[in-house]
Amino acid sequence: MEPLYQQTHKQVHEIQSRMGRLETADKQSVQIVENEIQASIDQIFSRLERLEILSSKEPPNKRQNAKLRVDQLKYDVQHLQTALRNFQHRRHAREQQERQREELLSRTFTTNDSDTTIPMDESLQFNSSLQKVHHGMDDLILDGHNILDGLRTQRLTLKVGSLLGDREKASCFSLIQFSNCVYILITCPQIVIF
Picture 1 (tube, rainbow, N blue to C red):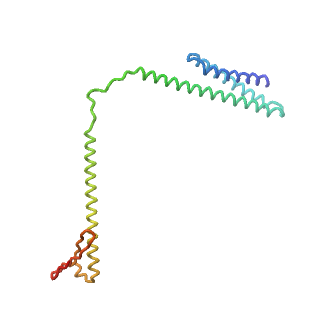
Picture 2: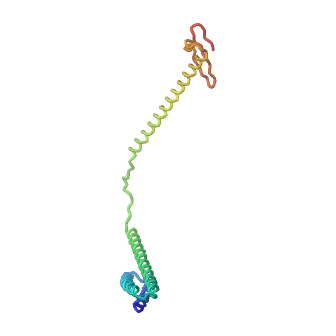
């Protein structure tokens, strides 16, 4: 188990150094270096499976230590795999941005046509409809206000009649309201009093 572990550990360090070269590689060799790193990572994963089997066959006093070493290698390789994927993702995003930039720079823009029109008919119809609705709501509110005033006047007329105690004479009383003052107008055939 020990020689296989040492070979795998050495290969992990080699991949780490290649990852450093990956950052400085030119565009043509990046793909080649990525493929080499991925092939090495796949080879290490297959070795790790073999190491797991061998670590379980170690004597009981060495087994736990062997499993810990294999798990540490696994963690390191998974970290390298993630770093490679992140690098590939950044590279693809950078290449896509460059393509889009080149596409924008190579595109020729033209001015708008001279007969550009803005459709205003629908907007004008909508605006006039809104104004009609607004005036209709104002009229509705005014009618409601007038109805409430009429109800208040009827209530006061009935109160005055009931205060006088004679319901027959209540029809002879009318109220005239000027600003904040209320005047009782008695309209019986015989007398008119203000």
